Amino acid sequence: METIIRLRMSTADGHYGGGLVDGARVLQLFGDAVTEALVRHDGDEGLMRTMNAEFLAPVRSGDFLEVKAALVSTGNSSRRFECTAHKVIELVDAADSAADVLAEPLLVVKATAVAVVPLSKQRKPVR
Image (cartoon, rainbow, N blue to C red; front, top):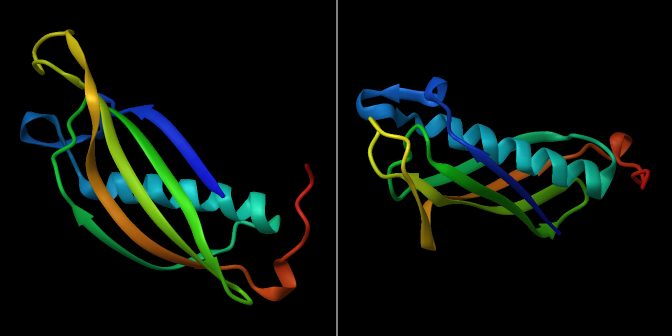
């Protein structure tokens, strides 16, 4: 099972000089993608237990990201995910409105995450 979120980083997401987006914003998006997968799989949002991330390329205001969370294994209550964020569109210049669709999506962040859905909360999701 895989969930996908596509969105544009807004000027409000730019935290540092040059519109650089704080890495924590991408981790928040990973959390959202994992939460959707948990609801689809277990019918409950669960709780994030761990996340280990690698930041590979900068993300700036105006960039479009594709964020994925793929469920790779399940335990009794634990769910392990591989998460990726790819830049698919980037601004040519922060001072202009021109943007380029990247020929190949650029991997900007990757992470492994473990979430837990307590046995008492697991239920068959409504489809």
